[in-house]
Length: 91
Image (cartoon, rainbow, N blue to C red; front, side):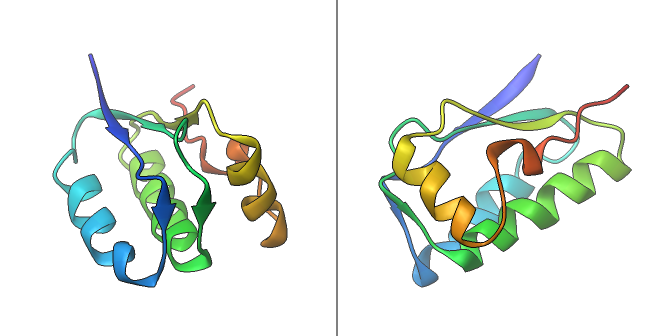
């Protein structure tokens, strides 16, 4: 069974540490990041998600983003990322 985290509408600088804590609370579980409400995701929160995706992959757990909004996809693109950049699915 996968855990799921619903991202907030706006994720800026002050949201990075709480997001990291929320993600780490799910360590050991497969994790789905629901981005269906995101209107802005800053680069620091993107880095938190990338670091978590790498950690989940190293632990051979699934980590993926689902339902990204157009605004989320556009913000990710500014940093050269896509929603698939966070996938760490176990083969």
